[in-house]
Image (cartoon, rainbow, N blue to C red; front, top):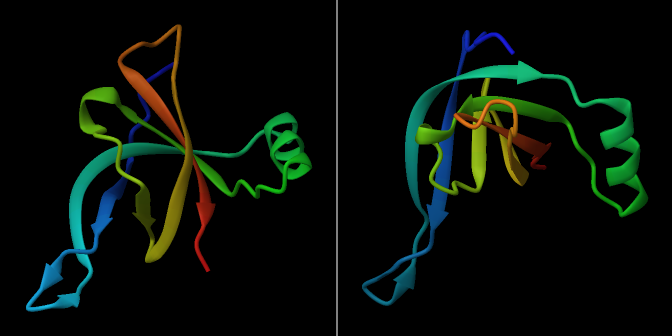
Length: 101
């Protein structure tokens, strides 16, 4: 695999701290380089069988990932539904994502 990290994404973690007795949303973001990949037909249909829709996969350097649960790309927010460390390229991880409504 060649390193074609020519897109930037924001890895996001959303927490809900209580401030003055009220729950608020706090978003922690990290801008990283990524490669946008298409979801393969096998993965797409296997996910659909269990009721999950997969929209996009982003490959990133594993050192950039800290179990964030969301990705922002081109103004759209995606939920990370699966992370997968590539056996042949252990310094990369793929994030399979579903567009949030």
